[in-house]
Image (cartoon, rainbow, N blue to C red; front, side):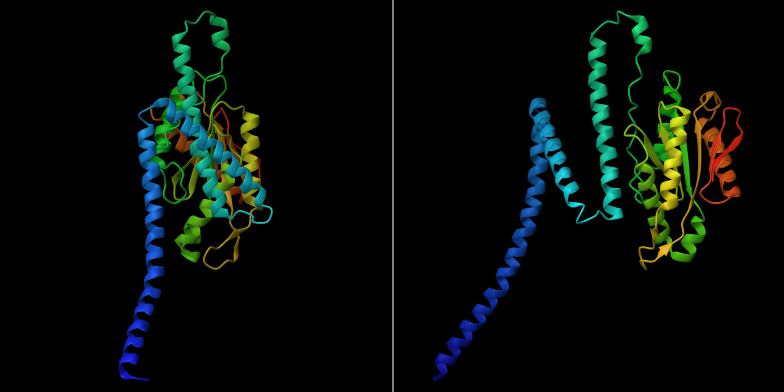
Length: 316
């Protein structure tokens, strides 16, 4: 074969090779650009819709309708593909945030409608149940995705202020991961944090849409349950205790099962807290009293702080 022909073939081969390498790179860049453009387009479209209320409402209602259908499809697939714990937790946190936003939206609309109409029946007005509280969810703990200690304090003050207008008492549930420091030392901080995240998911499943779960400390969760009877509060506390007791905790780094337990306490938000000069300190005192009693009697114990201020063993 002539030398010139060999040179020409070599050049063609290099060009074909470069073309073969360039096509996948161009495809990857185009794909990434498409994702970024889609996100920008959706954000820009939402910003434009925000200027026109009716279109924003239709857009929001359409998204909720599609989300409901997507959830139904996902639910139908969970028989073959069960959700992982982290996936279940993520959906629970998102559903709690969405429920809070929808509750706030509807309650504000109802409040505006009620303000436009004069009250004509005082007796009926006294029998109307107070509307769901508008929880403050601004500060979120990076570990669990729950409202953090700052949000906990803000919402406790909100709960105390709403106590006098409520038809029922407000309930508070304390859940503390046992031996957190020892677990972190023995298995690592990542494992200890994962155990608390799993506990928070289990507790969330036992709460109502109107309730709020906060992470107050690295090992302590506090749930606010507005307008609830004592029997219903105990029932939900028991359900959370049994769910955690029966759950198999797995070390995320080794995949091995680990024996993990928690201590529980609950109380109704009484006058002692509502009238206290420092409601945060008083509630903290009651939480420590209940949790200390639970730890003293063993693991997975449930204690109640009674109206008299004493600790009572409910189950263990």
